[in-house]
Length: 263
Image (cartoon, rainbow, N blue to C red; front, side, top):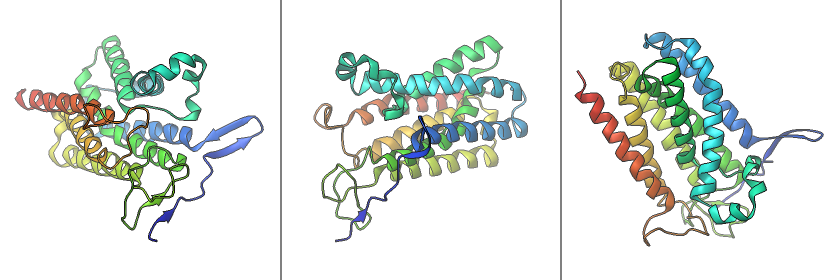
């Protein structure tokens, strides 16, 4: 009675003959561009050791890290047996299927290589990336909602949504929960730390707060998110998303401890 019908949003944003642009793709593009612009603002205001040219050059590296890492993470973590039998679909990123944890690994590898080549601090550079990352997470989760994917478990709450292909029961709009926690709230918290407490002066602290915050937010929302049908629960209790978020949160705690201990 109180369910919200799923909004009739075409997943295709623009179409010019054979050229099709999906909201999913636009979300990634917009997140990368806005994240890059925000990092430039932080560099101009707080960071002395990193120059604008470094961020400009890293934009392509970050894009490749997100796309390649995110896709390979999804392939390896979520559907390895399926893609082994359908190798040609590994490159079909336009059909959806990206993993944040894989994307984080991809960007991390790209950042380490980039920083070593340019002889800049990986911790200071990583802080700038992590301060900007919630922007991309926000748009990515909104795109998940538009695609009607990664929806939540059945609910009787008044804001439950009836997603296409998910039966007639209202479900938690878990994509919007994640957009709020991982995107808006995490961005605001890190921004307060940066602008009010100048935490960029302690390299690695922002990155630690980001990884810890994301890990906690993702682990929490997974209790309301429908597990992948082909995976179910790991150890009979937690989802794969929760399992992968544990080492992320632990790594965040280590980075915070390291940054605080430094003079």
